[in-house]
Length: 326
Image 1 (cartoon, rainbow, N blue to C red):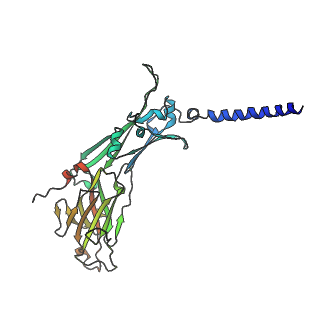
Image 2 (cartoon, rainbow, N blue to C red):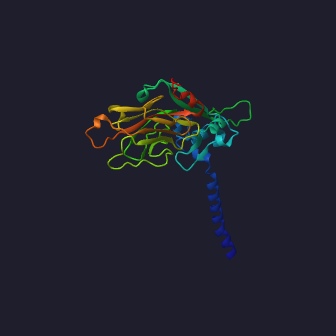
Image 3 (tube, rainbow, N blue to C red):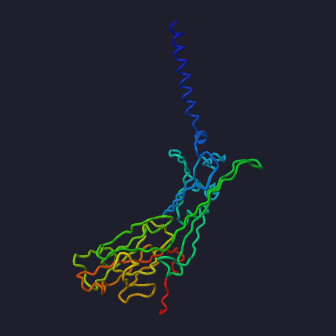
């Protein structure tokens, strides 16, 4: 009698445990997407592109991919399915789930996944309206689906997401006040911009190692000031090239008196351009001066600005100004 009761008590427990196991195994990505609001045909808004300074971040919604009869293993950059680095990484922990691609914009990474890297030359506008040649770089490509069908025909619609990032290669590095040691830029990075990698620093020595410290009563006239415009966390495809550097009496360069330290090969006789277009640093120096309009002031304060170009390494030499006197 006791044995019979024990058997009848264990039977419901075993059945219940089996039900729990079956339920946990049944929650696959496919069944998850079947119940999700994004389980529908793909649309243009399914892709998100973030144009960073070193990496382009792409993401597409996963459930539309499953709706089309594909999964994350059947999607790759520019149909380069044989290269693991060209595949995305699924993230099922966010809502809606996405497939993420991180594309480094180094030369090797762009080439491996067959993305297009193109530099165009355009006439400058706005702050750069005086320049007839302003460069832009465009990196573009696609995320493609691979049809797993083994037959001659298929009933799956091909999925292609197109993406691109456009970066201007000319910037105004500004608002470095000569009474401070150095200032990094405050940046708004909207579409694609490398400006967040640029900064201007002031030094007191020819090795550019001792940051300039200005006393309260200012520095002496004719003190040589060494200026460095440098790029950090920037892809090695580009060097820093200074087109023009000048000083103004106001932090806002458009509405104040200005004095050109150099524009191309034309320079103030006290200005020396020591490194330009040959690395991710640019160096020049000049002697401290006063603006005439500050004649009644104890201290003359001015602000430095540099029109800065990021040039592709192979083309930097062609963009350097040519001195007609040489």
